[in-house]
Image 1: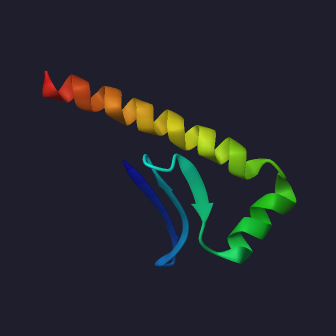
Image 2: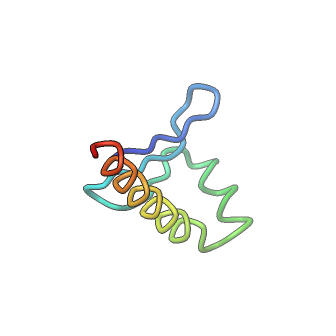
Length: 64
């Protein structure tokens, strides 16, 4: 499971099920988020984990 966040065709964030971490890819995007919320990366990672679990559950439903 992979999430790639893009802005104007530039990758700004990456998450995958192997690392289970959101990884900022652009310093400016990370700084803008940290300025608003110092804990954003941890919260974002938890949100992505939730999306991963929801996707997994939905795939299970579709398989039935």
